Amino acid sequence: MFNFFSPPPVIETEVFSSMPQRYRRTGQRSAWADANKAGAAIDSFIEGPAFDRDGNLFIVDIPFGRIFRISSKGDWDLVAEYDGEPNGLTIDRNGCIMIADYRHGLMRLDADSGRVSPILLRRNSERFKGLNDLTVAATGDVYFTDQGQTGLHDPTGRVYRLTPEGRLDCLIANVPSPNGLVLNPEENILYLAVTRGNAVWRMPLMPDGSVTKVGLFFQFFGSSGPDGLAMDEAGNLVVAHASLGAAFLLSQKGEMLYLIRACHGGTVTNAAYGGEDRKRLFFTESETGSVLVARMPVAGRSMHSYARSLS
Image 1 (cartoon, helix red, strand yellow):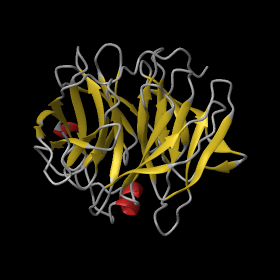
Image 2 (spheres, helix red, strand yellow; image 1 turned 90 degrees about the vertical axis):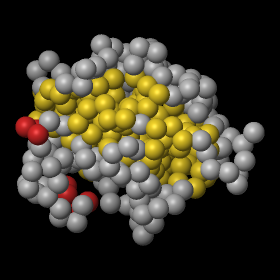
Image 3 (cartoon, helix red, strand yellow; image 1 turned 180 degrees about the vertical axis):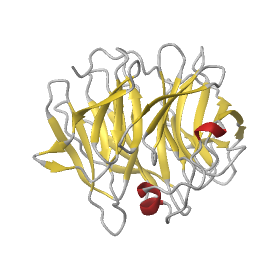
């Protein structure tokens, strides 16, 4: 039984693979780091893990506009490098690789050619604040967050849904830094990481596609907040926390089931289930440019069972 006064059991991680030195931009400044990392000359900042059907892990490198493919053996391959800031990435059942690009908008990657092309750059002729992350429903609807530099001082971050027919709906527009998002197995609840609010919000989805009774699902602490989210088959939610050096597994009731502790670095930014049985949970640890992995008790929800996708 869950006990609010006892620390949760710990699941340990290990390093799956680290960015090879040949890909690190040591000593190189970037516009993204100037704005988001106090001008530090970071060599990379990885995010957006997603697996394709062949078991390859795709990740992004935000400040240098790069997308990597990591094999099941941990070997890195540079797939694309372009004039953008790819922040989130997802892959649907048809192999369509979609990117939430902070600089440009919603993009598509052709992994064979390395070409990145636009899906949606603007809404009503206005640029987005800065896209952060995305997820895809069984209907083919794409949910994505428009974070920009929002926070408690400016709670105007937005969550959008783009249908396969091209209709764009703004579901909510008062979020202090919307980040990762994921659907529950029934796809009637959208969970949203609210980084500057240091919380996860629960967004019930109505049959007509609108949201109602949005509530606070879990409140965290720390200098930053929740970043990427993932979902297992039992409806438990993985929350990667960017400043606590860990991820957390929460039940549907908001109970803290496990603490998943980073063995290397302290900036856990996002997570994706993988492996043949989908019981291995892979994390991007952005401080060291490493991918960590942990063995989990329940398999992750399959991300390759979608019925439709954007044309």
